[in-house]
Image (cartoon, rainbow, N blue to C red; front, side, top):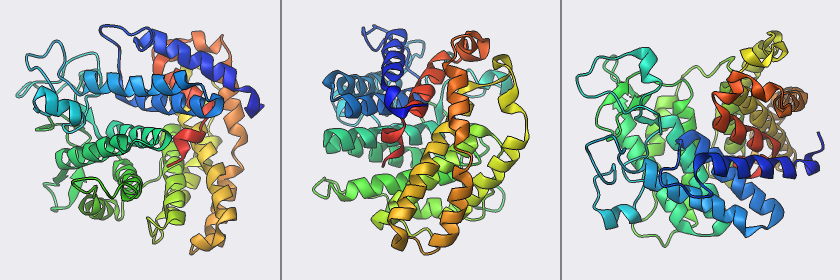
Length: 391
């Protein structure tokens, strides 16, 4: 695919996304979903970078405001009102992420004492840690593009709230862990198990925000995540990262790319972390391609998961360029470069995945329409990933 020719379809996707979700024209009750909106913010900022059209930047910033005023506040069907942080109206406007952000699910969260229903839980609201880290990244991207440190401050305040709410000591063995899903007010776990890649994603995101905050040293109070980073390093120690899920593999490659960027900046001494992440991604990648997942019809495929892999392969390409340009930054440069080259060998799959989901006939399948908005923004990000991939 000609990468210079993709700007028009990305624009079309993001205009359609704004209309469908109540961003533009603005709806009284916009349909906001945190994971989807994090990718959408980065796509609008990418379009601004590509076109210099201020309307694209303004859509991204308007989306941030909508998310905070929708997912940072209690639901219409909840007897509670106001900011989920419990802050007064004026203080909540200044610190909209201080209580975390809701997922944006269709149903309200499971109430205290209500029995758990594993199937129904997927449709119920609450807070997901890995959604919050994506929003932290989106806010930091907005801070980079606008030069306004407020966005990075909001991201760091969200990191502090998420860490305090999600990190708990395991009842077995006493080791700290990250809950998979918490209540809207972050007071009780809704799913107590830990996501496989949540600790890694948290560690890398905290380091990204710490690096950005270091450039805003005049902030009061100072922006500091050192204790959270130390705890996340401990949680990461020894965890198994290998997965054959394409979205999970893509996430590993995204994190690896950020580790590489942070290493070059001197903000993260990987101590073998980069090698560990890359090796896990390569094992998963080799296993994934041995299957027939990309040969199936659209009805048996999930676009956003495949597009997550496509985005990750773009991240691997960016990491390879970084290692080649800054070899002195990597203590095991030859080893790292060799693994990344093995991963980049799978880059042709990007075009295979994108072309499949650019086909309008494939987008008529229920697997596309049932997840239309998340599929749209993941496709847009895959086609034009630079802003999303850059810390």
